Structure formats: C-alpha cells, structure tokens
Image 1 (cartoon, protein in one colour):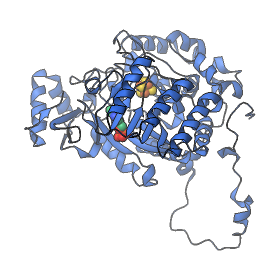
Image 2 (cartoon, protein in one colour; image 1 turned 135 degrees about the vertical axis):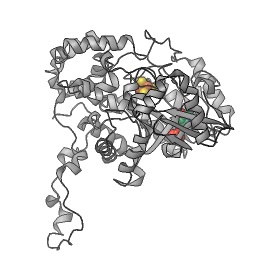
Image 3 (cartoon, protein in one colour; image 1 turned 30 degrees about the vertical axis):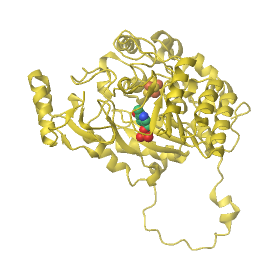
Image 4 (spheres, helix red, strand yellow; image 1 turned 45 degrees about the vertical axis):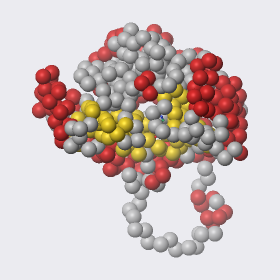
Length: 486
Ligand SMILES: *Cc1c(COP(=O)(O)O)cnc(C)c1O
Ligand code: SF4
C-alpha cells in the first residue's frame, strides 16, 4: 500500500520482522528454553493482533474504485457519509435489500436520533447479515427490531440539564465539569444519552441544540474560572472531531490558562468512526499535538477519550492512527457502552479490550447502557454486566481493564456496577447510592423488561404493580428513608 498522503509513516504491525531475524534475539539462539507451564497459545487467543489490512471498502459498490489515498482523506469521509435511506441505497446499492431499506425508513421515523454513518463504518458492516451486525445495530435503526420503552424511562435520563449552571456545561461532581461545545458529531449513535441535544431535530424530539456560540462558550469558561474547586474539564459530545482547529485552540488555550485546571479530556467518537482524520487532517492533528505539548509543559494533562464499542470498528487504519498519537505523546483512553448484540459476550469484550490495549488505547470505562428512548433492544441486564466483568478482569493488565459503571438515572452519576445496595433479578431493579452527588437520594436502574424472567415481565405488564416494585426495591435496600431520584 502506498502511504504517500498519510501523516503516518512508521512501520505498521503488518511490517514487523520475524523474531528470528532480530540481532538481539539471535544471541539467544543457543539458550535452552525453559519448560513452559502454560499450554501453547492458539491463533484465536492472538486474534486481537489481527488488524484488517485489506481494502475492505472496495466491497461497497460506490467505493469499488476508491484508492487508499482517497479513502483515508477525511473530507471524502465527510462528503460521503450516509445521512438518509436514499444516500445509503446510493452507496451500497443492492447490498441493502429493499426490505431492509423500508425497515430503516420506518425505524428512522420513530427514532430520537438522525442517521449519520461514515463510509468507513458503512464498509465495516457485514451486508450479508446487516440485522445482526454490531455496527449496523449501533447506527442504523430498523423498525422490525424495536421494543417498547421501559415505563420508567425519560428523555435526558441523566438529568444533565438540571445540573447545568449555563447551557452546555454540566457541574455534577465536586471537582470536574462537562463542557458540551457543539451539537454535531462525525456519526450519530442511536443510543446517545444526549439525544435531547445532539444531532438535530427529528420527528420524535425537538432538541435543545448546542451550536458553536462564542457567547455561550465564554459563559462556560467564566463559570469554570470562577470555581476554584474545578480541576478537571471533559470536553464532550457534540464531538471535538468536529471542532475547527482554531476552536480547538480557543478551548484549550483558555482552559489551560485557568490556574486551577489540571486535566482536560477531549471526548470524541472520531477514532472509532473516522480514524483517517489523524492520517489526513494535518492542521487539526498539529493543533491537538501542540496543545497537548503546551499542557505538558505547564504540568497539565490534555488527552483524548474515545468511544470504541466493537472490535470490528478497528482496522489497520485505526491502529496506525492511534500509534501515531501515541508516538506524539497523546494519551488516548476508551469508554465503551455495553450494547446487546454488539459487545455483550465475554469473547467480544475481551477481544475489544485486548485490541485497544495493543494499539495503546487504554480501556477506561464500560458503561451500563443508559435508559434512552427508542433503543430498548440494545440494553442489557445489570446482572449480565456483572458477569461480563468477571470474564474480563484478569485477562490482561489491570490498568487496561475497564471499570464497569452504571451512570444511574436521575443524575446520580457513575457508580461501579457492582456497588448496588439491592438488585432484584426478577423485576430487574437495582438501587444505588451516590454520596458525593446527593446523600439524600436513592438511584434506581431498570433492566430491559424483555430480558427478565416471566414473573418479572408479568409484573411490569400490570401498571398497578409498578409502585409496589419500586417500594419493594427501596425496602430491600434498607433505604426507605431516602428519596428515590426521578
Ligand atoms: C462522566 C462525567 C464526568 C467525568 O467523570 P469521570 O468518572 O472522571 O470520567 C464529569 N461530569 C459529568 C457530568 C459526567 O457525566
Ligand atoms: S458521538 Fe457521542 S455525543 Fe455524538 S451521537 Fe455518539 S454518543 Fe452521542
């Protein structure tokens, strides 16, 4: 592959030499290797090192003649993003059956999020079986798979708007804030917690909307500067990938100049959906590296937090982009959402964690899926998350082992998923406390009803039972003196 136009120049995994060809190891040729205590590894245990180096996009009719140089151009990715069923048909042609396209149209009419999928991700979908594909499931709604929302579900279940001193700034925890500079992302995730704000109005939701606005940004900066306890700023979705380099500079230079700010994270879905920005948007990458370096000189951390959910999102293009950031000292951590049919098996979660670690992206969090409208078929039970965690911990380095958290409804913030005071597998209700956010409240999470045993499904089917289910949970937790958060 000719990589002339790429910023990324170092050898990739595919080019690594055999160990027997390396002089340092030739010196060891005579050493008798100690008897192994472990069984020989099989290929599948090393699967995480297989980064797809094929020209996989050429399977897509519209990209059949697209060369590597063109495919890694981020502008090509932007222009050719799928934003409607018609655009999907124009790109994948007969790979999507007419039934699928109709199903998608009906799915979109009922969805709280618009559709936006990059050519990169479109090319990583298995079009022979789009219904079960982990990438399709995350980004393209289909009506036929839809389940009714849980009766306890609300828009903005995390109550971010209640904790906002000024629009687009969330101050929930004592020493950290969340700043939402934009309302656009390089992709729209069906399960987005911020479907109350992100991605433009839909049939279902008229959005709050956080456009670029110098006045709004200044208010957020002034608030942060006025609160000496704040050390940590998360710049989150809308997405830093969509910030112009001068706006990236505006945010980072202002925040870094505030003496009490020590850590800034740029949260972005970018590496998972459009890694080619690192290859081809030199201005943006230079701005990022420059401000990361500037922060380091001040003794402050500027890093990226990204959002890979499926090992299928990762190819050699991704690997090379992440290694490029690593070489320039840009720390990247990952926050996944646990999604049914995407990463909810031990094998897939392990593969994801190990593949991320291999390219120096540190797995940080796996989130219990938030209670978001219109995506009930993507949620899993808390019990399943606890079981998955058991299979992941111990598989690799502890610092690359994600913490499984539940960002509890009602604005309690992130809780270790295991830390519930009570969990009823039949009704699917778990109860959490969050003393650093509000000592007076109990926070309840509700498993998806279709995953409950029959008895639980029947109880939720009777509206008259709902209050009793909740009272039971609070009593079981011994927390009847606390107010349940809504
Ligand atoms: C997630 C989040 C943060 C950052 O939390 P960490 O646990 O430090 O990653 C900050 N503010 C809000 C409102 C959040 O939701
Ligand atoms: S990238 Fe993040 S903010 Fe944007 S739609 Fe996806 S989950 Fe929401």
